[in-house]
Length: 75
Image (cartoon, rainbow, N blue to C red; front, side, top):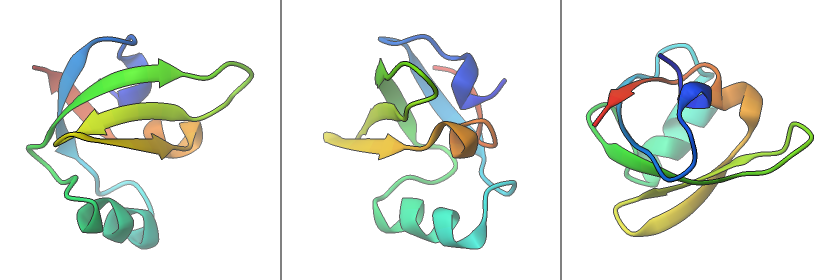
C-alpha cells in the first residue's frame, strides 16, 4: 500500500522509501521521517495538490507524485 491510499485522519507506518529520489529521501530523513516512522494524514488538497502529514509533532507537506512512491502499512 502507498501513502496515497491512506485516508485523511488515518495513521500509517512508513515501510519503504527507496523509490523516491535521493534528494527527497534525504529531506525526509532531515525531518526525522524514515522507515518505521508512524505518520498521520492530516489533509489531502484537491486538484492534485500535496498531502499534509504529521510526524513526531511536526506538519509536513509532500507532493502527491512523491507520496505515490512511499510504501506504508496501517498502524
